[in-house]
Length: 177
Image (tube, rainbow, N blue to C red; front, top):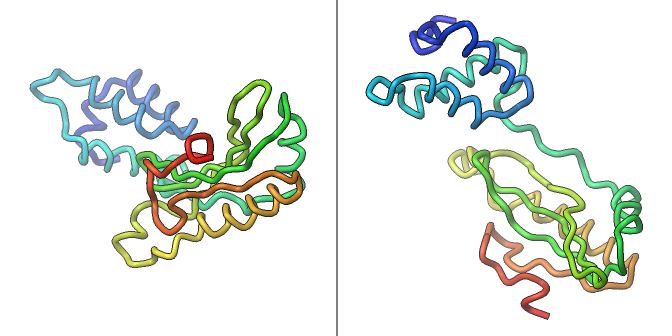
């Protein structure tokens, strides 16, 4: 690797960063690299991200997030059946992280009153926004289709506020019911 940032790291720091990358812990790898330098000579965020992306490639890993596998209704039903308490609703809700938007499929129970993540649906990173491939949001359509089928299977309501676009503050099932 030809990066002066990478070359300036000690062998122990390079090994620690590579181990984080092997576990697909991108942001901790960036933080570890940046914190290995004194504050006055710390590399910039984007330069460090470029180095981490190159390390991903050199280690034979993909830096770009792959879409999640299609949701399987049978597997999700088994997860719901294994939950404590009675399931009272299925909900899809937007979430986001440093890679972009995704939709979490959740089950709500009554005793205990709790919510459980059944699956996360991601169909790409936010680069899709810049290259014009979204909307529509395929993760929202998939989560809605499977979430409705799952809710029907258990005879409970399905809730997905903000289905047309990412909306982190969309009303939740418990607050809207």
